[in-house]
Image (cartoon, rainbow, N blue to C red; front, side, top):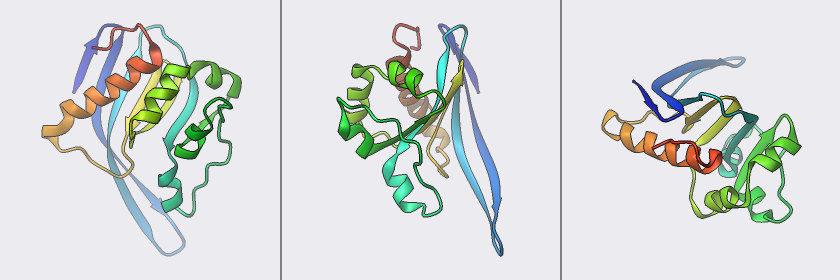
Length: 150
C-alpha cells in the first residue's frame, strides 16, 4: 500500500528476516510503515522502549542519547544516534514530552528523508493497518513539526 500525504509518501508492508545462531535459526516478521519526506532531513537515530532490551538478553542499549532536562526519557526509551548533537537538537522538548506521555511500543529508525516504524516481531492485522499508520503519522508530525502528514 502506498499513500502520499502532503510532503510525505507512506508505504506499508510486512517484512520478514532470519537470524542464525550456533544451533538454531529463527524467523522474525513485522509490519513496517515506511515514510519518505520530500525535502525534510532527519538525523540518523533508532528509538525503542527500554523494556524491549530487558527482554532481549543479547541486545543492549550501548550509546543512549540522554536529555539532561528529561532524565525519565532515558529510563523509558533507548535512543541511539550517529551524531548525538543533531539528535539532541532534533528531539525538541514538546517531542520528548509527547513520548513520555505516550506508551510508544513502536520502534522508529530514521536516516535522511526516510523513517520506518514497526513493532518488533509483530504483524499488524489488515483491519488495524489504518490505526497503525495513523499512529506512525502522529509521531512523524510530532517529530517534523509543520509537515503536512494528515
